[in-house]
Amino acid sequence: NAPARDRLRIAIQKSGRLAEPARSLLTACGLSWRQSRDKLFCYGESLPVDLLLVRDDDIPGLIADGVCDFGIVGRNELDEQAAARRQIGLPDTYQALRGLNFGQCRLMLAVPEEWDWQGVQQLAGKRIATSYPAILTDWLAAQGVDAQVVELSGSVEIAPRLGTADLICDLVSSGATLAANQLKPVETLLESEAVLAGPVRTPDDARAGLMAMLLRRLDGVVKQQD
Ligand code: ATP
Ligand code: ZN
Image (cartoon, rainbow, N blue to C red; front, side, top):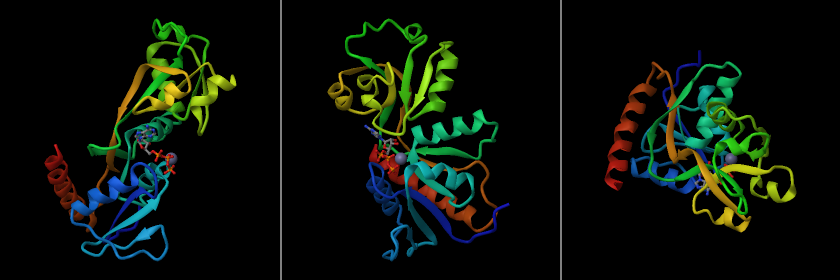
């Protein structure tokens, strides 16, 4: 069991698409931080709520390990790591608590433009490049299709041209990147947005009250935006 703490820790992306909107959202909830000397940790001033600035990939694990109490991360990243944990028999330790109305994108299959797409049965025996192997593996199993998952950590969209895969499964927002690589989207695996993630079990110390208060403020702020 993690030791009791009386300050809350929230993990957000240090830099990238979710960094600025996550910080603005927490500021709108009344949080403020002392100017950080290092660039990783921001000490909460208005409330005992500190920020940890990290890579988005690290956020689910930080919550799972009890290092952070909340995190702001894409549903895609949260679901991928949850699916990967489940596939090796680990229990669910975190969950998406709220959708935050930013960072919208879709996890989609995209095929070369010249393909005549007729449906998922066409994927049999094909190689699919992705940074989301666990979600893709689960989806293929649910569709009853036997295809090969090729895990790539980045530049997934050039894999078909390089010949390392036949098609890709990647995040899409405007579709411009796909078009630039002569790919077209054909199936949606996941509708994603930034979410507030938290532990399945709320800690039974001073953090519980802070977490409840922050959720109430967040609901007020996110509702006003609609
Ligand atoms: P980090 O350095 O933190 O690992 P990253 O390169 O993995 O950064 P970003 O590209 O900043 O991450 O994307 C963060 C999140 O933004 C994604 O996980 C996703 O939820 C969301 N997002 C929204 N639109 C897009 C898009 N078009 N492409 C990629 N991610 C998107
Ligand atoms: Zn990342």
